[in-house]
Length: 355
Image: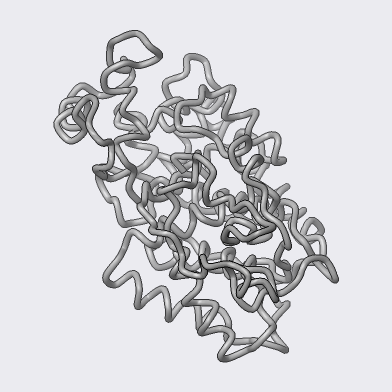
């Protein structure tokens, strides 16, 4: 068996093992959790996102990213949605989130619609998980049964948000470590990074690659020279860094495997993207190549990795609460003048914090 086929076989074995283990790793989560209490929750969220994405296709990537940014801090508990109050320092003010995450207003819109249909039943944490899956589907990506039954946290942790969310300038080993800390392995890292097949990123997230990579005073040598020229025109040195560009050069609003083909051509936008393919001797290279040649394999492993990520640090049973308003714990919305969601400038999805 040649090395490519061996790697494919290994990936398929990994997929089988993960899928077999998933029903036993949900803790108390279950895709049928709301069947008797809010059976139409999936269709409600789908309708809201269909309407919103018709005028803002970027929102689909943003919502996948929002779920990721939530899970990597306190776990998938909707703590990222909490605003500042007298007792809460919001994660929205952390460096990876500030003026970056978007979709908070859309989550509130979803919550209002769900509350009208099923008051006090569906958690904000489950809304984030469902919105991520539905966003994948609406951009022609895979669907999966989302394990449900998460409850919402009573706290936020801005310090952990600053520490746990991977920066877009990390090396591959640093990326692996950040994901391993969340119980996610190298295959999960490569698969989840594939969510960059949709969305946008700000110049500020990759400006170092264009002019002063690793303080060398030169561009990143792993960046395609044609793309380099295009990006330098879009992102002038010492500019504001607010211009946006597509994460996937070829099909920016379609969930497919072209993200990986871009890496093969040195057209990965973020350093953390290109590291997956351009790090000499890396075990991620074979995984990228397999996802290029087999989109079905990518989709199946992406689904398994999203379910795995969605199970990080969940609150269930009597833990936490079901918030009636996603940006405040119950009974606390009147204690702050910050009921309005802060302005959301987007860098769009980035499963390694650009994201």
